[in-house]
Amino acid sequence: MLLKDIITGLKVKHVNGDVNIDIEGISYDSRTVKKGFLFICKGFNFEEKYIYDAIDRGATAIMTEDESININDITVIVVENTRYALAYVSDLFYGHPSEKLNIIGITGTKGKTTTSYMIKSIMEADSHKVGLIGTIRNMIGDRELKTDRTTPEALDLQQLFSEMIDEGVDCGVMEVSSHALELDRVSCIDFDTAIFTNLSRDHLDFHKTFENYINAKAKLFRMCKTGIVNIDNEYGSKIIEQASCNIYTFGIDKNADITAENIIYNSDSVEFFIKTPWGNGNLKVGIPGKFTVYNALGAAAACMASGIPINSVAKGLEKVSVPGRAEIIETGRNFVVMIDYAHSPDSLENILKTVREFAKGRLICVFGCGGDRDKTKRPIMGEISGRLADFTVITSDNPRTEDPDAIINDIEQGLKNTSYPYVKITDRREAIKFSLGNAKENDIIVLAGKGHETYQQFKDKTIHFDEREVVRELLEELDKEEAEKRI
Image (cartoon, rainbow, N blue to C red; front, side):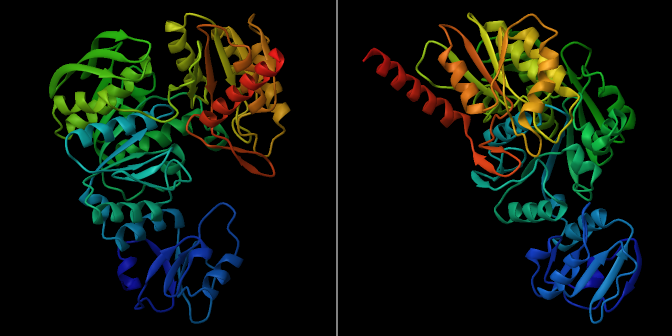
């Protein structure tokens, strides 16, 4: 494809060099550049050395915001915003693939992953082939792909959409993070439907203010044709105020277009009657909790707005399962171990309140907070666990570059304001072993924060850490230790 065609319609400051050259590919990472590529300079820590690395690897054109770049025999295109430009040229290079798919985007602090899995299950129940892009994994039908972040970079998204089309996918479901919206990763995507799940305190290390966070989420509803908004969340109205699409609301507590009635909360599921503009019916979802009702309402509304009948919605929701979300680990013991990705104040409160409703014994919460992230939520989460759990084990999550004990001490400040007992055990494996070793009949242990993750990140290393495996290994260790005591 000619370079001049790739930049057609893009706001360009100036071009130095020939635009009548063939471009064989696009890259934003100099290490992946090949002969004939256009290399786009982007990133917070971009260094000029990457340009020369890209040229050494065969780049024939460079796109940059730096007007001082001038290299012999290399075409240099200067633009105002290389992040947006990356999205624009990637979409054009791959032939506007999102226009050929039914793209459903989900944004919000919590519920994005669960809602995306619900939509995928519903669409597949209606015989559609679905592409999934999100936190846990990317998928094309049943084929799993590697994922590094909730929403990939713009170029990677367009490549994924193109690959989906080649493999017969007709519906793309994706989580849309606030970072992706702010950094133009999802610019130039033709969203058919967008869902707003909820909004609570998170990612202020990046957005700085809560208003910036809200405004970032609201961008999606100026990029789609139909918006599905949780009106029970206090920020739903602010999303609607900034929207330019056709809006449908969903909720339980307020009047909404899509509502749930006669809700039954079971220990392993929820059941309710859904009322929508497109039809009504009874639904059952095998994930417990009030938050499941909200996620199911949003998923059902997005699908039914796309023409999916209520019977397919019911069939898809009944068989949906989401890794690391209220997931029970089979232990064969007289107590229950549940893992959940809860890593924000609201999500931790939701899962603990849900478990509290059916817990017959003690509720034991094992959790930590991630390093290099919003520090202000740590004592808040400590207070929540101290208030809702009978016993708390404060431990490490992903400390990253921070001192694990310093993070734990931040959490402890919130727990000190409650009356329930707690212990601090820095090593997460040892913390889990402590909770298992002290569990009694009918207790429920909630391992919060890691969920689907299979690793732990430290300052100097990343280790394999799958809590499903860890729990089973530790139970074997405890059995062995108990047997040795009897001997």
